[in-house]
Length: 496
Image (cartoon, rainbow, N blue to C red; front, side, top):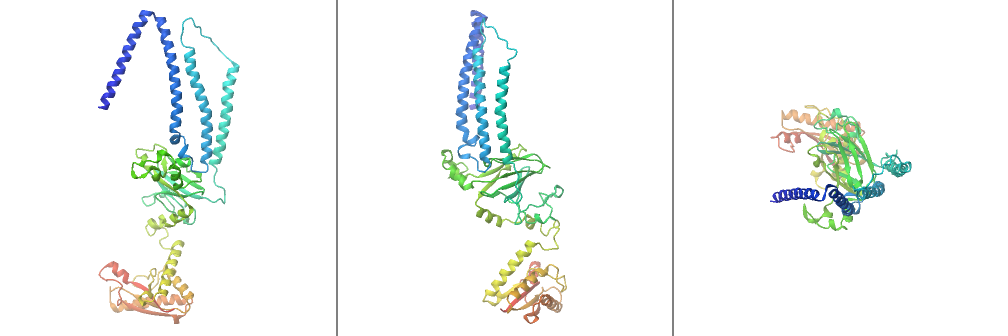
């Protein structure tokens, strides 16, 4: 119905215009062509002045109405340290270009009115005027010089790279159709090397796993940053041109395939602080259409967007950005897991399958220290038995594997820490094969562990090696998982 009414209105306007044209043509024949043309010129000149007034007033009103949304005023002032200089440059440019805009528009319509077509008016031809040429060349040149110098000053301030030794966080954003893949450094604070030739389904960024700096890098699903901390963002693209855009922080930089770019900024307002500022504005004191139980200001979030039309799924590149206190950031960061450890470790792509990493050695040492302390504090005898989770032997033999030494070194260190402690080392097998052979094998394996510890300086009198064979299963022998649990090496604290 609405479409039909619209079509009818347009048709009616067209008919009226045609009829007016016919009436005008008829009137011109009656009054004479020249008289009628002069009337039309005068009328059109008057209309142009009316249009000029309406147009300029509408420009002022619309700019005032939309300034908070489109010009970065009001609730959406910059939330970064460098943003104020950019906003100031924008204000200065807007001031001078606004003056030029009003002067040119008023001049355009005024001259159209003043020099409208009229009888007996002769045109004045001015082939050249040096004074006029100097005025309209010099004034714009001077104004542009100040604007360009101011722009270069702001550019040098905003785009300056970090200084050696400066305290900052470096993260990476890689755009692809249609998302951002984020990468943060781990505890070492450094991002590892990449090679596009290494990109695969399990290695989306092409990280070089032989570079130790890559092993603790994390791939979070959101951008989380601490307030008042300088951030350097590496920006890359994997397929087409994208744009890394953080509107509230005045951050905008192209992500170009094959040409890494960067941007540096310092967030100055946490997400919660920005929400509190929004709560002072009536337009944000209304229910959120997507969450009617909360006000619009309560559901506000910073965002990362792509400012290039990179394809049909362009809209889906939006990512949430959270600015938090440094304490909250450190807590969040400590909960993130290394992409290498969670997705690459132990797979065919892992170049370190036959060695332990420093982070794993430290982690296992902490786990062992916690476990032995709990065993020492325990009062129940069964709680004083600990399994050596990372002690393994070659299949069907009593020869320790190379990686077993880390767990046994932790045990030797604990025995040195508690010089009065004596332990029993117990070897266990599953029920596969001959029971007598299993008994012998478990005894030999327990003795191999004892020999290793004595080789580390632990007195043999503090160690007992006992083979239990298949007689003390920890789980059922009917499943492979159960049999694996039964093939184990344990130690029991006898005295402490």
